[in-house]
Structure formats: C-alpha cells, structure tokens
Image (cartoon, rainbow, N blue to C red; front, side):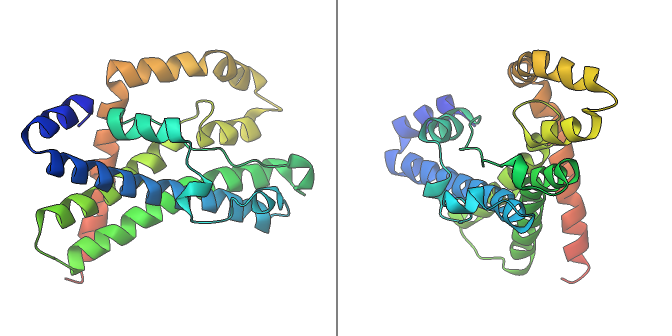
Length: 216
C-alpha cells in the first residue's frame, strides 16, 4: 500500500483515507520511538550518556522523528528517523558495545511484534480499524527489525559488520562503505527487498502465532 492506494482511498472516502494515514503514522511512531530508545538506553547503560543528554532516551516520538523521513514512510513505505549519536570514546569495549547498541533497536522491534501478536491472540476485539492497527503494529515492527539488521550503511547491521570485521577483514567493510548505498537502492526499487522481508516477516509471525496458540 503506497501513495496510489491512499489517493484512490481519498477519492472514494476522504475520512477513511485520513484514518488510514493516522493509523500508519501511529504505528510508525511506536516502532521508531522504541527502536531509538533502545539504542539510547543500551548506549547509556554501557557508559555513554550522549544520547540521554540529547533527550533521545525517551519513547516520545517527537524526539526521534525526522519529518521528511516520516512523510516518505507514510506515503511511500520507505523512510528514516534521526540516528542516535554514540560517542565511542565513552565505551569501555567499543567493538562489543557497538554491536550491543546496534542490535538493541532491532531486538526491541522484535519484542514489540511479539507482544502485539500476543495482544492480537488474547484480545479479539471486533472492528476493522482495530484489526488494521494491530496488524500494522506487528508488521511494521517485524519489518523494522529485519530491515535494520541488513549489513548495509547506514543500517544497524552495518555497525555490527564493521565491529566484527574492521580488523581482520577490512575489505568487507570497505566494499560495503563504497557500494552499500547503491546495493540498498537496487534492493528497494527492484522489489527484491520486499520479497525477502515479506518471506522473513511471515515466517516470524507464524512462529509467534504458534507460540501464543499454545495458551489460547
């Protein structure tokens, strides 16, 4: 669902289209806020208060939203937030700590997707918009988690690769720094990324459902 879908909806039912945009925006705010908070919290716990001092250790979405990135996401399905700043000089074990900080955001999104899947299983509230909101909260958090662990700059996965290979296999880091952005653009606009993420998110969602069905 993208901008063509939204325009089509506006032509048929403007109020329904507006509600749809608000649901997507709300779900995006939840996914972004907790993702960036997790980065900031992990950084703070590992000795770097930079993000906390900048007000980023918060679940207030307005501390994290890049408005151009938010608009792009709502209307085109691809956007970004303000990155959390990490001062490497404050970390005692930079390579290890950088991996932990980088993975904190995607892991938080996985946890949120798991929790919202549980809510969906245990609280079957009737209503089209409730179903749409919960489904977006689950799918967006799964997509945020999986997308951000890709080893391509400026995503979290690239920080993990850099910390793992910067000493012994620098050619991998150098290659990704030079060509990673082009690779990301190709993956996004070719549709390959949608296929891969769709397959991965469906698999994880099925696992979550199977777990909660043990108790329902």
